[in-house]
Image (cartoon, rainbow, N blue to C red):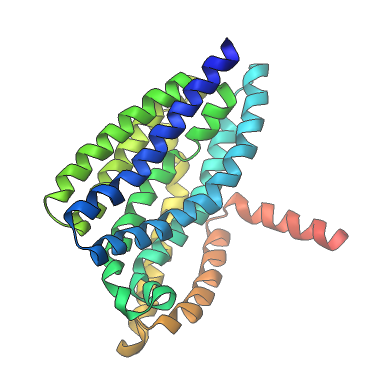
Length: 278
C-alpha cells in the first residue's frame, strides 16, 4: 500500500508539472499569432537548457547523497550549500551571457526571421536566474521521499503560474515571459518550505551562499557589456560575434573564480591533477 501510494502521488506530481510546462503554449496558441507563440516556445527551450544541463544530472547525484545523510541523521546543510554555490556560479553567468547576447544567439541558431524572440529569451533567462536558487529542492525531495510536500508545492506553483499566465495573455507574449520572473520568485519562496524543514536552511544562510556567485555573475555581466561596447556597432548583435565573446568570457569567468577564491577552482585543479596522474 505504501509503495502504491508513493507511486500514485509521484505520478500525479509528474502530470501536474508536465501540464504546467505545456499549458502556456496551448493557451497562447488560442490568443496570439502562430509566429509569436513560436518566439516563446523557442526562447523557453533555450532558457531551460541551462537548468537541464546542470540540475537534471546534479539533482540525482545530490539526492542520493542527501538521502544517505538523511537516513543517518546527519546534517545535510553543508552539502546543499556547497552544491548550490557551485551550481549558481556556473549557471548564472551562462544565463547572463544568453540574455545579453540574445539577439546574436537567436540569429545564430534560428536565423534573422526569429530575432523577435530575443526580448522573450532575455525575460525568460532572468526568470531562470531566480528559479535556480532553489534548484536543489528536488534533490531534497528525492532524499527525504516527501512526495506529499512536493505535490503540494507543485500544485501551489502551477496555480500561481496559471494566474500569471492569464494576466499575461491579456497583454502580449513578452508580458507572459516577464511575468515568469514573478513565478521564479514564487518558486524560491515555495520550495524554501522543504529546504527549511529538512535542511534547516533559512534566507540569511541562503543569502550568504549566493553572495559570491552573485558578485561573480554581476562582474561577468558588466564585463560582457563592456566588451560589446568595444565591438564595432555592426558586430554587436552579429551571430558570429557569439564565438569570440564566448571565448573571451570563458577566460574572464576563470579569472573571476580565482580572484574571488571560489572553491570550484580547487575542484577543477584536483580533477586536472587526477587526469595527469592517469
